[in-house]
Amino acid sequence: MNKNKLGNKEKLSFQILTLPAVVLFLVFFIYPVLNGIYYSFTDWNGIGQNYNFIGLQNYINIFSDNRALSSFEFTIKFSVLVVIFVIVISVLLALLLNSKLPNKLKVFFRSVYFFPAVLSLIVVGLIWNEVFYRALPMIGSTLGIEALSSNPLGSPSTAIYAIVFVAVWQGVAIPLVILLAGLQSIPDDIYEASKIDGAGPVATFFKITLPYLIPSLNVVFVLTLRNSLTVFDYIMSLTGGGPARSTESIGLLIYNQGFYDMKYGYALAQSVLLLILISFISILQLKFSSRKEVDQV
Image 1 (cartoon, rainbow, N blue to C red):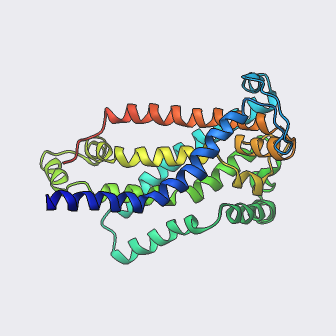
Image 2: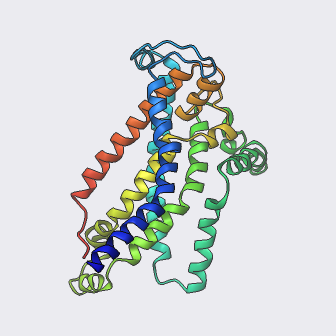
């Protein structure tokens, strides 16, 4: 009886301790999400008390809105490029930093690669805006390189690649740490056994390292995809959506239409579609990669 009483007291203590976090989660996350979904079916302007319930009209309008469609197209293209480059570069850097380098060099390189992660996204955007606007054209003119003599953010055809470069530069840090932890969790005996069997570096990577890294890659993929599909800070500080709205992401479009155009219900409908898109891609990727995952005991 005493053990049962003690167990009940512990459960009650855990419930009391977790109650503030649950309440905050419900108030500041669940309620706003449900409230936003409700208002996405209205024509609310975000300020007035009067609004009309219009059903699915906001969602139908999105698929005939060229501005919204071009924003979705830009964001998906941007996300694909960022996800590919971040995963490839972070895997290569993780393999390099996990190799037999001197400890001092490992600490130095880890600090260098992690440094961008501590900077604010707005600060990163403002720094690179100055680099692209002033430093890069000056370097291009000095060296006589035509491709570098103009600001890449000023052209619709090159602006997206400049933003992708900045996003990858800042976005590799956290995935690098996650993948390093994944590499260090792989048992050394497996690598020793593969050497005895005569497996080369490429075969070892694809048959041993990559399957063991899939759980870490899942986390990296979902985090990078979410950050890319909801990109706002980089766009705002680098281009503001220009030139000619060629770099207006979904996040920036939702902000502009909600707070400038006063189409709050319409902006919320776009937010809900973005949520569905992120959830669908993440679930699809996790199901696909779970088939190739190695069971670790």
